[in-house]
Image 1: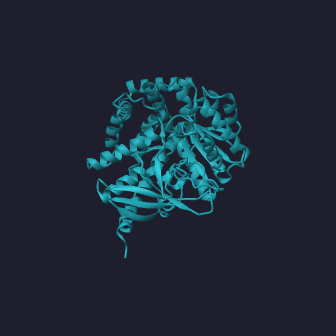
Image 2: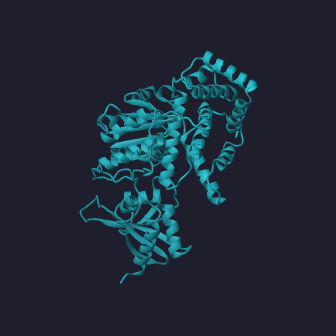
Image 3: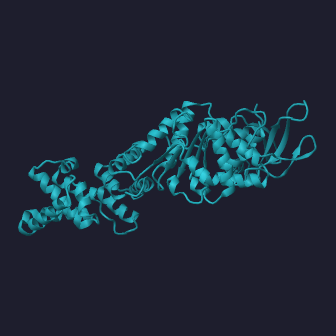
Length: 478
């Protein structure tokens, strides 16, 4: 027959299991054993200092909410930690610790007196190192949604993606060490870093992989200094097989943090461990960074991720819709892809807004709804129409393929559509004649100028042609 404390903890586990992924649940909650329930305080037994610290750093908000759900507002949690006796041979013993008020990585160590069942007071040591263990248990902090499978490859990111996959297949053994990924915000460098980590974990389950932001790294280092645990901090990071550090630019001007990262970098690199670094600019443009560190960033491969082209944007939207099990008209997908050209994050945000508008207002997803949403999404500013979009509107009007428009064919209907695309591109974009010509069949600026004059003349002299041009312009302006 189950006792009360076992029943309470089982109920807690049901809630926890619904709020974290299976691997995290198996690693951090399956080994826990309920010990007792007394005075509305549930005591649970965890296997080590490190285990306790990791729960406090990553799961304390979830644990607190779960305990209060099961035991009411006065419910509390206490840990019974199994301690290895390093002084004599009397074997393991336990210490009891109440939950702390920490909610983030900004306080990676506990500073409180605790009641050891041997009658003395002691401070909980920093969890970065567990003496006597050759390998450490580390929560990789990887987002399973950011896999290679969900990463859309295009001309804009092919080099970075290929290098990332090579690194994940053979970490630390390629010429891409470190792999330095850089781009503006929202173009997929964080996604790619996670994808590398996930693939390494899949290919090499025994390897220790850690994703950490530069801000987290700085906070942990500052706290290690406060607690005089710098050596433990360094040793912890030196034990990582694949270190993925995001937004390295935040280390700029942080001289002491750069110094410790330099030594960690050297140790990992010399031991054949893999480093993946992301940044918002290439190494040559980084300011406030030590020259010796910058030179090491250039040892491997620096690969950039650029703005996604039209085909890549369309593929991203289709992948997202397929993943969510949602169908959307082709013209709506293309309209969103043509309209949002800034970055992937805003592109997916626009798609989410469109689906929300459709669901909340119980409206079908149509091109008209997409236009209304896009106007609001871009804050009603005058949206510059792209040459790609103009070509799409013209080709849809004449029911021809964009590839035909950009081909060398001299068929009358294709030539006329091409001239209209050039005319409206000159009228509605800020692009130069040379740029328009290059995107409209690789023509020179003189050809574009001739096309614009031809269309102007036909609008003035041919009523049927003028009606067609007016219809196309209406579609472009909507």
